[in-house]
Image (cartoon, rainbow, N blue to C red; front, side, top):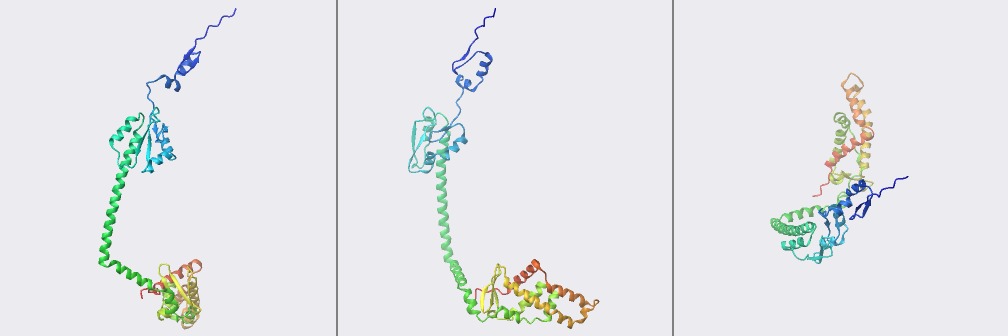
Length: 340
């Protein structure tokens, strides 16, 4: 004969609408968040962060993210000539609205206290914003006053400068600089200048020139040789002029026309290359006049080797660097005087 089953005991939680037949399940239910929330009325409601539009959030970071897209919050900050609604942060009184006139320059402590009394949860944020608004207005007023004072001081300084004649002197200098006309200088003042091709043909390289290259090196020797021919000419007769020392801007006359050299001064590099070849062609003449250079035991033998090496210069990028140094040296001596 089968035993008759006992009626199971029922465990019930009325507030949670929960029933079960095992005590272990009921004990587990009492630990749930739902049971704790509904059966523990003394537990404090967590603080809520409220926006002026009425929305509330548990976390301040969420409120900050909401403010970036909240039109009422922007209205609250950016419209000084309109009334802005301040929504009570209490859930029970969320429909209650107080208007704050932004035309008022300051908010009294009584107004702040009134807002605090009407708010039941977390009105500190709104109160803080109102106080910050007052502080910001005071800061802006101070800044405007400081700027006005600085402007007045600057005006006084300008008046003193004008009385001393400093501005007049500066204007005079600027006018002198503006009077210089490069086209007039090249095409009129220097209209009879020598062509570059003619200048190269009339170099008349002397044996002392190549000996100086052997003693001083390629850069110094070539600079001395070319510069001596340029200085022999009047400024208006020279075939090249430098107009900008920093950028080494060169103007060269050839075929009876003045033209600006390329940014890399390719025309001037070509001129230096032609002169270097002329120097090398003078070596056989020097050896004929100095036969002792063929004697390996004679000092002229070593000097001849050094001279040949210096005259040849370098190759590739190395040669370009050497020629750039020559151009830099020349530009200092052929710079156009714009104050004349």
